[in-house]
Length: 98
Image 1 (cartoon, rainbow, N blue to C red):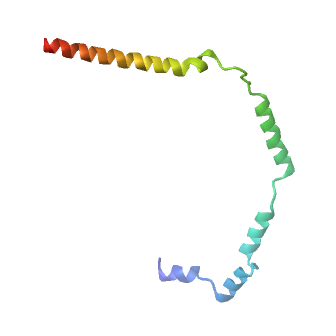
Image 2 (cartoon, one colour; image 1 turned 120 degrees about the vertical axis):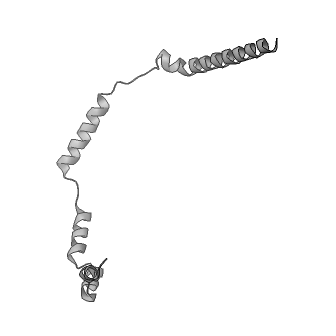
Image 3 (cartoon, rainbow, N blue to C red; image 1 turned 90 degrees about the vertical axis):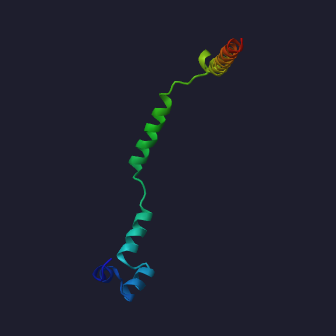
C-alpha cells in the first residue's frame, strides 16, 4: 500500500471519536439496518408458500417392499459374491498344486 493510500484511509481523531460515540453516518446506517424488519406481506407470502409446499407432499404411511428389503438383499448379494470369489480363487490354487 502506498503512502498516498494510507493517508487517504486514515481518520482524524475527531472523526474517530464521532464514530466511537455512534454519531457517524456509518453508525447511524448500522443502527437503522439493525431495526429494519421484514415487511409483513413478504413474511406472510413466505409462510403461505411453505404451508403449500408441505401440504403438497405425499405422506408415505408404510415403506415399500424395496425400502424394507434393500439392505438385506444387498448384504446377501455381497456375501454371495465374496463366497464365489473365494471359492473360485481357492479352486484355481488347488488345480495349480496338482
